[in-house]
Length: 226
Image 1 (cartoon, rainbow, N blue to C red):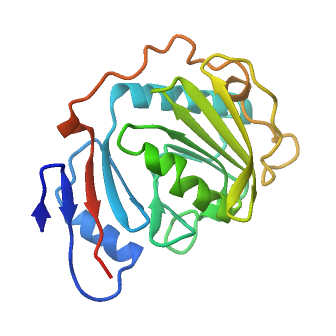
Image 2: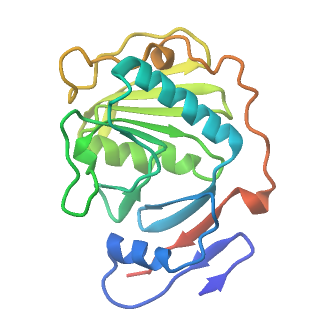
């Protein structure tokens, strides 16, 4: 294992690479406490969760529970295997369709998800805007929301088709938006996103992220080359 100055860790080995195998190896590694870990297209990303990131997640979660009820199934930083090569995402928030049950391995699949929310971190922005929406659209996830504290904007992607989202709405934090009814996996009466996400967001006065030293902002590990 070679550690480079940028914090990138190369893992090499032999045999077929699988998501389960990569996660098993990660469990044996000294992953720092408080880091979010996920695998995107075969690369392992470790990102520290700063207070700003969690504060936004908490506010969005509260709005989701206000809209859909406190008993709705919403998970955070939990592995969800997604379409594509070696994609084991851990979204900041994922609303599970009513009545869905975890599979044999105790995990929900991407097909069980009707809304994904990602709060952008500096080191993972390329994933949040690139491979992730493609994978979620391929899985048919009806709505994908990106909350970007660096631009103070929210981008809502809807109408998945042919590996991409056909509709996109961009709003500034606090800007009134449209009412959307794209959660096709929800039961009747649960077809709208929370007003605070598509209407006036509760992040109006959020101070924005505190800059982190480059050395602390991310740690990225590249998977076994096949």
